[in-house]
Length: 154
Length: 406
Image (cartoon, rainbow over all chains, first blue to last red; front, side, top):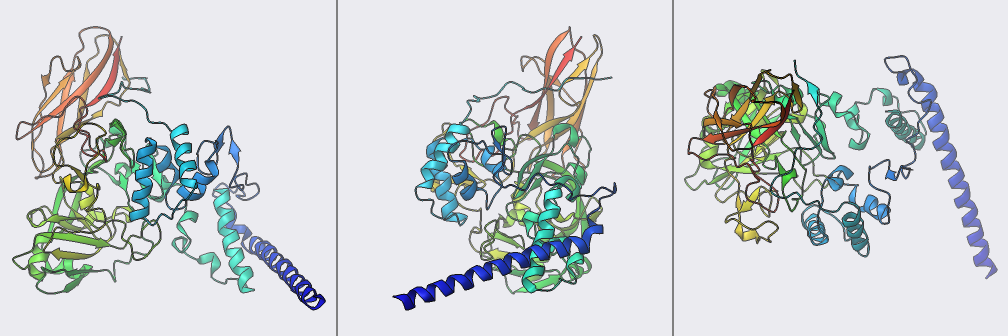
């Protein structure tokens, strides 16, 4: 028993050491690269482009919107982001408004023809998220012109 | 922008760290070697598009014009819609480019370099209307899935190339040839190299038309990368998906081509009309061929406010797929009365035609100017949505603009 314990203890030690080495290597790589390449990061206005970057958190939510994808923050967001935005843009999801039945059919189509993986329990979560947050809108045979931007024509 | 730079640097930095050495040529690594997600996210600069173009989708890129951007008689690149099914190919070298021909009904397999195509066959130039089959999809109820195009997925640029017919005849067609199918170098969204994002085609009769081009120039210059550089098909008057981009192979088929997006409900509509929302079996769907008659008021932009008594000059374009537009009308009273509007002859077959009119409004108030084109067979644009179909194709309902006077 103690032999086995010792082995695992050593293995963990080696493992931890390797993690530290990798992290250090990555950090030094980034530092080296920034130092080497500092001048190319100046844009035409002479401004430094990398002094601040507020967009670095892939899960950041602002005003109820998931910043990276533009999707509404609501139950099912994470499942939708993980399964629906790696092949195509979230813009394609947001502009499509369908019933649950048609979303399920669309998922089948993506699985049959577009290499979408099986979604398991996430399928219902995703479809609920979509139909709740992006419900179809009744448009009838022709809608009223909306959002007209008025301007004076000379 | 900043994030991209960071990600780009961090990616190279990780490579550097992993290799334990600096990537010597890292700084000069061409942009297109980076994964697509790291490419410049500003499509207006990247594709040289007007800032008022509307991005519907950024993976894959799908961008449409607004009506007033399409005012030019010949559509410039800046206003030309982008419709991609897959990822824009990264390395496009015209000097080594080859187009090969194969298929059950090809007498021989043969391939041509771009230079051979240009020198062995007569070069022709036509102005050709290309409209996405799904242009207008956003108006269907119940909604149809796909990019929600409004009105701007249409263009009419000048295309220069060789006739597909001339090249097909050089390859040699067996008498059982029924269809050509194209293949191209764009990649599938799933990055699976065995999958084609799109591989459509046309029946022989369309493939053999004078105006069906293997084009290598648009508006007198190399075709922009996003529009199919260095070689594409241009098949005017049919859904623009027939006009394959980045072409490297054409199969001459003895069956209706069965490539990606030829089957299912892609670019197909119910053979017989269905009620909105009705389920349609795959075998009851028919491939879209000619696009229907349609028109667009490109001047003025919707929302014009006029002084009392000021008259309004409108203009725009009309097209009718395989046919010519025979008549053009406009209405300022929601179709109660229609006024005749002169329509020019097309510069060549399958090019859009131009109309203009001077309108005087009877009194102050809110108006809509509706435009209605009629094709050579007497078929007009409907004022309401045409027949519903599962994928929302062929919406050719009248275009209208809002105007206020006084």
